[in-house]
Image 1 (cartoon, rainbow, N blue to C red):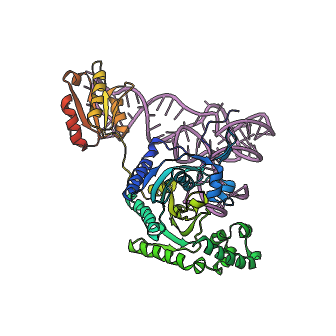
Image 2: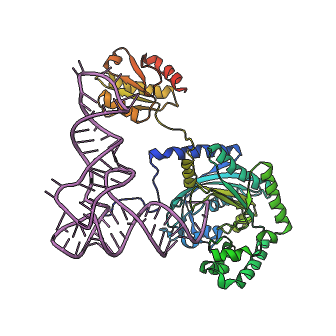
Image 3: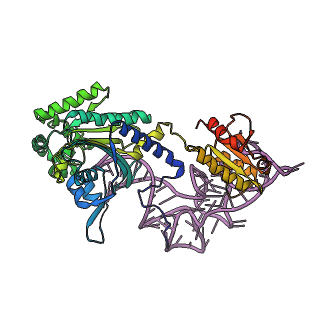
Length: 424
RNA sequence: GUGGACGUAGCUCAGUUGGUUAGAGCUCCGGAUUGUGAUUCCGGAGGUCGUGGGUUCGAGUCCCAUCGUCCACCCCA
């Protein structure tokens, strides 16, 4: 039997009624990023599978079992991007953006992960991504975090906790990793199955296990921060000072390790308690080895990704005001002489008032249903033109929101009158 | 991938221990003396009860499968 046509699991439609928060978020984000001097990058959704294997890490869950990979007609293995950073770095290397220079960029778009969908977790979701390249000093770590804070402020969302940690350099991490494996190995029998498996593949991930028995063991484990070398420690302290200096509150979470392999030094996560299990709205950190690892010149980098669906869910939950895009006016027209005149006048108004949102009635109907549509679409004013008005080269202007009495206005005065009424 | 809950009109939901043409509210459309909405009144449209099998004389109501949604795990934004 023919199956009902429906969207692919975990991939959602945004309908006109739900588009306002998306538009608002994008507009605000673009402004905030520009305010910090970040330029936009627009990238393909598909990259070579190899890129993600090398960037994200071959043994990560994201690459191991969540990528949408396929072989194209030329026999090449391609993947829908599971995150944005890899593509940004690829583009940076390819176009020489990272050759001995600083780059501040941002990027947005859909990313794909084959996971079991759940509230706040979808197979196609959207991220906002901010990256700064070519700056090794901790001041950019702070800058990037401050951008996220500015975004929350401009949007009017609140209630986040900024969690902070440092992974140190790859070398210091290796030392720590050895100490951790040694410690966990001694307690292997008490670990849960997942953690035992990770012991061999990705032992740091054992640190954020939620299994109670494992947590107990982890509590006594060697601390990552104790294994930082002097330079890493200095870097991390500078980041903390910088944040304190800007009045950005944070808490250090030594169990915060990222799921992607490329992070070094600073890692951070903005979490909320308001979204259930999917509590991370924004996460990022420093990845000084990534560019080189992908074949570019050794270039430090810091950045973060924001989960747009989660942020929007939070905006809805906190009832953040979002500017509406309802029409300003709805133009009712009826009668044999007025329809064409109204169409011409509507075009003229839109031409003269570029910000004007005007819906011209179409499909006929009496004045009553037309006014009903006008009210229903949220317009502030109705313009009414029947043959009576057309005969006087005028139109009736009627407020639908109790803003004054209806009045008749000649066509040629209408642009100025509307501009005044609507503040255009 | 694991465990659990759920799936009836566009939306929110009712539907008795399986029994004749499946209901409500909201939305939508039309009307209430000829050209004025959001209140009120009247009328109308709209569902093969997610889909496919099965049990039964008979299933929205029971069973199986499948798709999807939600919750938790896992993972992560």
